[in-house]
Amino acid sequence: MRIGLTGGIGSGKSTVASFWREAGAALIDTDAIARSLSAAGGAAMPAIVAEFGSSLQSADGALDRAAMRELAFSDASVKARLEAILHPLIGAQTRLEEAQARAAGQDLIVFDVPLLVESGHWRARVDRVLVIDCEEATQIARVSQRPGWTEEAARAVLAAQASRTQRRACADAVIFNQELSLEALRRQVLTLAQAWRRGK
Image (cartoon, rainbow, N blue to C red):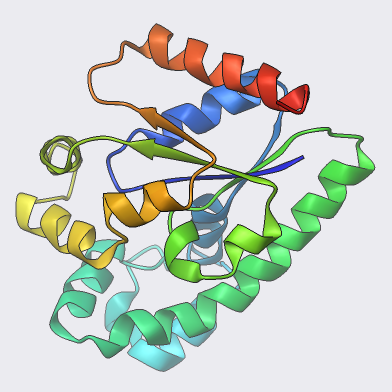
């Protein structure tokens, strides 16, 4: 079974992803793939530098993500230009990792896709979609506490993502991660994994 895992920034999706791994699922993290591609020596870096210039490259040769965020907020075309470089490479790596998981006999493959709803094509690629949801004020508060993030930046990313209503409309299951303890969140994920394994 292929499961699409998504949620807005600050929803707790990454924590949920770790619980799927605990449940024995193969986890394919598209955000981690993107970070790898744009790390120092990453396959996307030559094209990124050619497109945007060396000022978007940090001293170690990786993409300066904070500078890229600022540029994207000031120029609406930046996001599409960056995605045109990254998305084909992410897609190729995702297919490779899926093939490896299938070859290893995995019965659950979880695709962690932050922009699953926005992409328009992921819903057809997976059997079930799990959405991690919480109130927008909570998302902003959580993201604002991350190193290098401001409340303004968190609000800008939130505004660019699908709405909570749009995400929930795509979901086969929703976990409302508002005031859950880590253990309560873990139990919900493990229970859902067991149910979906049984085809329920």
